[in-house]
Length: 219
Ligand SMILES: *Cc1c(COP(=O)(O)O)cnc(C)c1O
Image: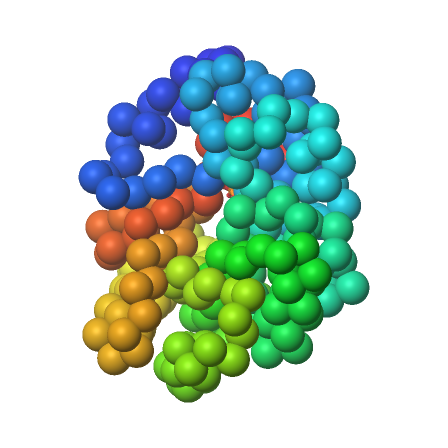
């Protein structure tokens, strides 16, 4: 079996120009994360607030911690002091709480709007038609301690590459439209996981979130 460093190297070699890599370390121990750190990785993704806070305390301070999973409003407080990017903003109620917690810590917290693009019921996110109005209210400074940096989405969990490509292309189209119409900078389009990051990059992703292809499968 390849080492974490070798797998990271192989994935980095495939990244298209301008695409950054979030190493998704959820459920994995700090030892494995430190191994990736020693191989040069600095951005890690987690999906549970308390797990992320514990890892933040245990690992070097120059790591950028990204929240990628559904975030309950009562958990924002655990990550507000240090989180670098919240990919998974899926409700206005959550944005309100992030705003309050960010203000408490005198921070501006970068966030992505999660868009529901899959055909499955289980995924979280705003409907595509809700995204532009939300970005416009943010552009009017409704959330002064939140910086919306772009959009995030997950394709259906399927073997059907055509379906995955259609869903990701739809998100990329919405992203381009949002950039063109809102006047916000929106540098980030977060899409692509171990199973579909190549398709995601072809469709215009600027940030891929890869877990099992780096750290092995999760039990
Ligand atoms: C777990 C997870 C990933 C990484 O999944 P892999 O298939 O292990 O690469 C990416 N994005 C989100 C939102 C996740 O929850």
